[in-house]
Image (tube, rainbow, N blue to C red):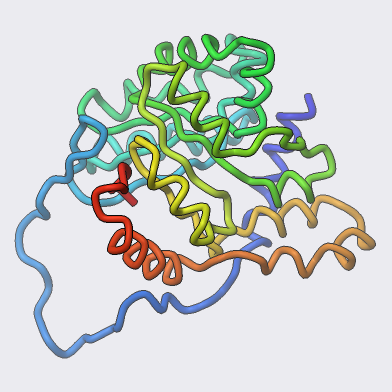
Length: 269
């Protein structure tokens, strides 16, 4: 189907969509200390515990190669005590029985680590319009997930040949989801990051976390252009450089939290 073909393209093209830049969030100071001793302190998140503060963020699903990738990542998370978010579970709304095992990672991850399903905001908007949000409750329950990652990707959708269009403001979709569903919600952007006003809007809402998924690494807008023709690449190529780096967003977030104080209902990033 179209979804499976697109997901296979995403895996193949991710390697050609990398942004090669230095990580400027930290200074590298090799002269001042030895290697760390002992285990890191466990991290509590969404009612579960991670042995180390590392998260395997939403990867893939819905195509043959995806099952192997997801299962290997799930085993890794189970062994090391990491948190994990699934790739888009949209295909489960369409073909649950065919693709469920691609996403069925709770048995591999174990009961104690945080594990989240994932859905694009365009699909959630459609479920709201059709009064079918109960399908998300059922999906999260069947996967034994702790909640749902809601991914926001307007630029990727715009550049995707078969992309969806948003008809509601994404922040209103978040509000509807929080009001109607009884699971934890994480909001992430896919490869471009969040500007300050978007961060402020999200921090005012009782979501479990904001996943930066900042500009850098795999640029999904660029990936979608690689799936199209040369004219589209030349015309829309400059748009793939729009966004915010993780370093910029760390600074923005710290400044906003200082300004907002107790008004900020989300404190996990």
